[in-house]
Image 1 (tube, one colour):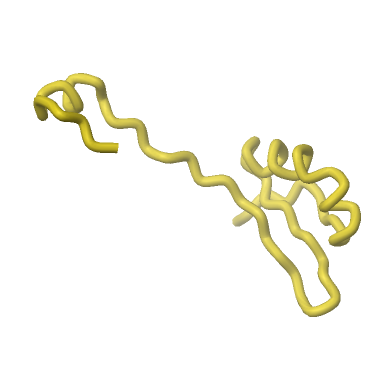
Image 2: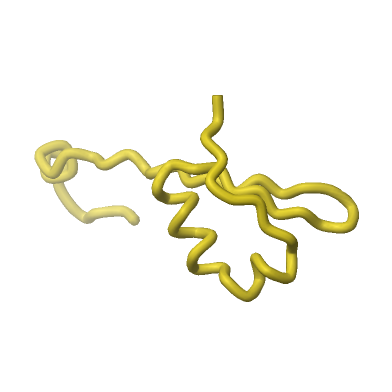
Length: 63
């Protein structure tokens, strides 16, 4: 089940986008209500690759 921290209207979300993103990053789904529907903002952390695995590939390093 999703944890919902705050429901925003679009104008409020646009004015406080940093706060909205920070709340999503802390694990709470943010909903933004628009005239035509609802946006759900979530944060998904990218997996970290261990340094040893990166170095074991040899160079050059691809981005």
